Image (cartoon, rainbow, N blue to C red):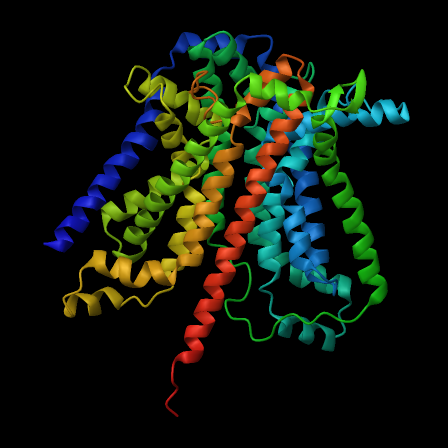
Length: 538
């Protein structure tokens, strides 16, 4: 009877995924008419916008992937101290919205930027240069984490053999390191390309006259309420994302490294190399932290750029503009998304990883992975076209649902990979002992994978706090989160307010990350203590 309730929950989950993932995409495609396609494609703006999107995306992807690989390689092939601290600093850009990166560059290098006024040097930020710079800041931490993770699992015995054969360090890098990283490099390129191509936050702030497809879609839907043109552009943005998703699935079959590590990588002593790494890291971190420093400085000035004296006027103005409501909206949406998303993603992974290769399980796995291929801006528009007029449409719950769908795939994969490591016969043993699947889930799997669950919760929390793409079409004044307050304040020329809101989002996410880090360390210590208490019968 208990297992029947488990299967009932499984089919309820399948229904939920069909309604929230498949149905909106079908609705989006179904609203397009031949005349809409002709109007958009024949427009004099379409080809230049497509060119702007492709050129900036390709340039940003090349720079972002090369920079992230270089940083990850230097970190893992040197004997510098405080490596975990550097990892945390390099991932700070992930904790603020993409639009804040664009705004930070404007505050620094715009026509009235801090650096521009201080040095009297105008770099010509607006256009391709600004989009590429902001996109690199926004996307490189994702690729950095992928490379950093892969480089930790290389087998040193291969390099020892190469050294015995007389291969130089450069030849070892070319013939061993790069081939072993092939799968990760492809995945990083696809992930960064998709992120940059579908983002409208950075080009909205720094694009100037170089309009990209996501910015055009945003203005058509938000500014002109032209849903038909928005739907066509949405499908155009969906195509490369789906292509990247399919290529990444194909890439998953490529072997990236040895499955068993017989010897951890041994780093030779080299003080000159380590000093050089410290210097390079210092320069990169200085450039990364410039936008954050700009946010801190401009949050507490009287009126930028006229009067830079210290003032708390921006805080008073935001309080008068009811920022408390936007803060409550953000926290409500973020906490509900993190809670609901973690539960749904974990249960989906439990079904697909621990219930065999049934057709229904394969469908759940495919839909769970599908959201990875759907850009947030496309998902948001598809929700508008699908659920407009429904009771939940004008509430924060629609924002929670779209965020859960938008960020579902990565936490799902975390749980799927963790649950797949358990013995494949565990369910059979439990059934023999009369233990239900639900009890097995709560008594065995959840306690053993608490670190993974904390990481899943943290992922949903941080991304829900910074997102602007998926929710931008679904909010109203009563449900608007902090992240969408940034473009609104910028349009009102309230620069100090945009800086303060960006800083507030960063502080909230840093606090959450520190709490998650503390919990994971506590869980690890508890696990080690329990392991020491287990008697070993020799």
